[in-house]
Length: 109
Image (cartoon, rainbow, N blue to C red; front, side, top):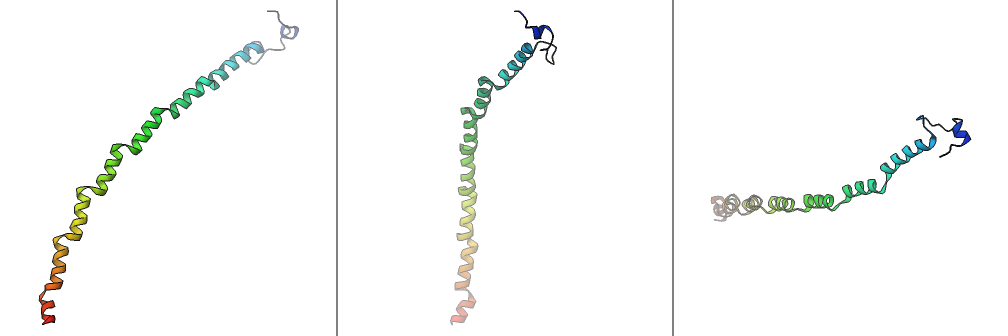
């Protein structure tokens, strides 16, 4: 390849000490490797792949998440506590004592 007169005179030497064309080639290679389809596709695949979405969905909507919610709401402890408060001995005893106590009968008699 024959150099142009300006190149022969050293007018087209870049900052890397080579001809501007060779500096451009290095810059082009860097830009291509950084902003190529392959680089973008790899980033997009890692972020939006089936595996990434499945992991998020499994964490949010998996059996463990639902089981934990259902157990907290409808587990034996929750039901026992609700039934105990409503239909426990203390609740019935209080109602029966109020209705059929000596004070109630004495007041009626």
